[in-house]
Length: 172
Image (tube, rainbow, N blue to C red; front, side, top):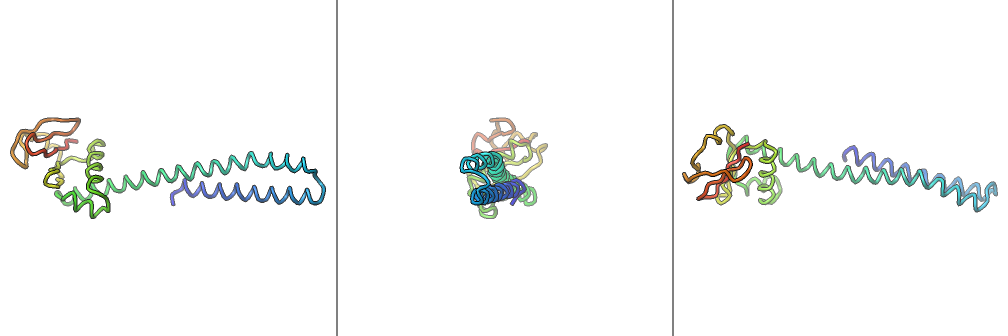
């Protein structure tokens, strides 16, 4: 559990505990006839405002902590993909997906995210289901496809594609 979620749970427990204590105190005062029914309602209303704020902020922290956990998980998967690619140099998309417990489409999406972040340089032959890690300087000097020898053209920011076989080169 991350810190945001833990703080959220603590705040919710504190808020609910304070509500319970306030309710018990008001019930005791009412049973001893030290306050009237109207006073008990007023006391409950006044106690509700800060308690509701504490519980609401606890819920907010819990939800935000969940979002942060998801984002951290995505970043860990991206780091795992990058480490595997750099250490092996060449790996099939399906093997990568099995090893990372994700779908091949998720692997493709992560590769494009890493290219967009400019932390991955290499190329992918999606038809052959293979990813290659390569130094960006080598790819920038490339004029022909490493797969089929065809002409390479720039198709997007940091991405070049072979006209013939569709191999994508990521120039970060």
